[in-house]
Length: 130
Image (cartoon, rainbow, N blue to C red):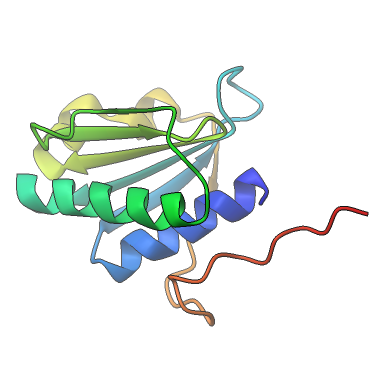
């Protein structure tokens, strides 16, 4: 699965679980450590934790294991590092304070698919190796 497919699929999963203000930043031309940031918010610490666990579980079922997870205990800002995609899930006041989108304002924004035709639980088709 390409990084672009992975980030869009993760965005659909998070939108299905009521994540707010989902933004995808293409940082591939600006960063040497990842290709995409997926940023979203939850309305409470518990929702941030639930969103984090849900997207991690969905990706893990497809064999995509995070390199690391930070902040899950507190639920203020959870970072899930999937190498070419880094997912940031914020409790809304923390998102405003840290303004990650402002720090990476030169990055291209991709629109998440708000109403996917396929089920958000179904991953995109795998690319065939010829």
